[in-house]
Image (cartoon, rainbow, N blue to C red; front, top):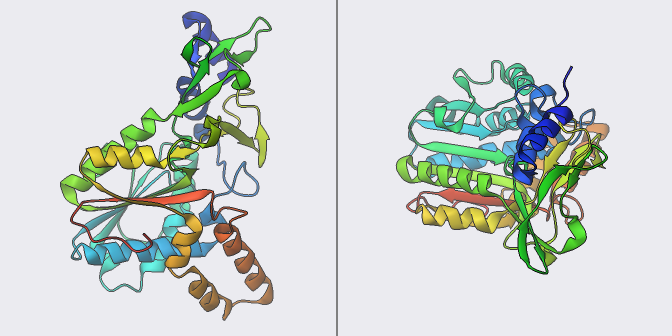
Length: 345
């Protein structure tokens, strides 16, 4: 029975090498053996945990934020969509956090863009009965026309990047090869010289989203870990996680999550070229606090047991703290230029 490791090696032996982006794409989304195709990677029993799984306040605030953008748009019939919805937790919380806004749920249809069969089933289970009009799509292009409110939480970090290393004779793209030992290796070691990463797929996504904003209006919220402009010292950010621990990027492809830090400056640049307005990035901590995270926590704690209260306080602290996710994660918003400046920016 073939493994993804053997499939990748055969491809490399045919062509001589593949670039880092090609490797990432195969490792994560190979139709049969790709990481996201095989399993539910989320949660304490998975390989990593995302903000919606840490605190319900995260999704609730985003839901209220989306409703506020809908009001600013003039309360039209609107598509509420999420890229890479995980287990559906964020959307469940967003719908709960926005249900008190008169007319909002009646005006929206919910659309989830998900490639993983395992995660689609989790989302279906989580969202059953939460809204009368929920649809799943395999691609962004399948979303019907109309004003769009979009959220992408930890979606862009999993998009493939290419790496380039500066050596004595200039810049060279970094490739994955099969070594004399029969194992996967990088053709150029990470320490060989100054490195830059280029997320061309992420920029394509940003362009598509910006064009959608320009055609139909709306607001797109992108939340991820990354940087605004070149990373310090142009270091490699490519990493793999398995069982909540760092894992060798090239070892056992398809069994670990592979990500790279998001270049938010590049996203805004691409959006501007398409004519869209861009706000941020601001830190996740600042964004959530501006949306009233502490007030929401206080309200929830009033009806909570001591154990629940302790869990909610520690969970929100993890999202806000500079030492945890508060500073590392950034938030950016793309809108039509006529859309009012959104809250939190």
